[in-house]
Length: 248
Image (cartoon, rainbow, N blue to C red; front, top):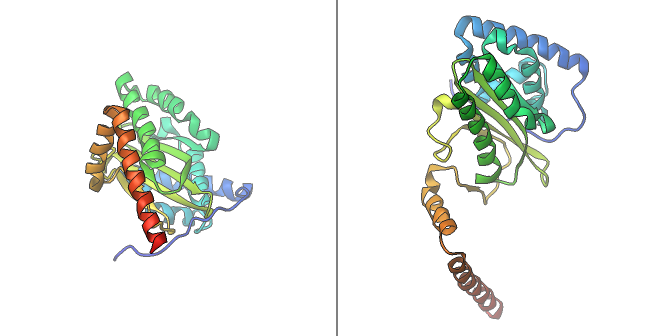
């Protein structure tokens, strides 16, 4: 059966009711127990990296199907439900200020899993780069405010992060999974979720942007005076075209 459907992610103010969140945590714990027992911790990671499965999980937990909180509240419940030591699976980061603790939490849990310093540094680098790509390399009008880094004791990792467009008040969610990963600038996403489309979007992480990537590197390495001269020429041509249109 084909996966179809639309889920909006509009900004909703306030917080999830405490009674609901407590139930979401308990149900998350039960679902995680079953999945890890039957299929293993890496399968739980793979499913959370699937936007359809993640969206369905949020609905099963009882949260609103069309809200920016679908991402933040569901991830918050999962983080509280998961026991890194018992499950061999961990969730670091979160919404707002919690996202700034991601690198520290990766280090703490990495030590718990007896990861080498090099492995912890690799996971931290992956967390930083995923955030940098979705906040800078992809210019789609959405600024990140939620970053969750998921990883297993086996070293696989995933990212679920979300950006908000302040003009439309709609969110966009970004899913990553290291098992389907071929570099940070070669179509790295498992999925990007959001109904609202923009006609003009710059995605420097796309495989189709390879030429643009090389040009940007050349511009950075070149003498800045050359770029100023080229920009002056281009700006002059644009101004001339506008003048012609005005005269016509």
